[in-house]
Image: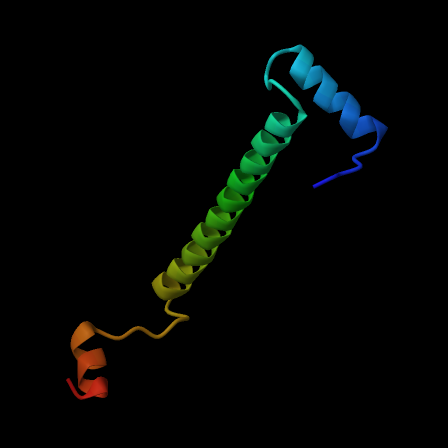
Length: 78
């Protein structure tokens, strides 16, 4: 695969290799992709935690209806 990154990105790659954070451009790009994937996963987890926190606040304030496990089983005919 050939990728044209442009001068600013190529300069970053050169500095990373010069500082020995990566052995070559391919390695640096692989590391960047892994770091980007980790960042996205962390952001997704933060959003999930915020959503759960909001739901818990609604439950505690009485705005959200809750059911016991027994009520759920009864509704499902179990």
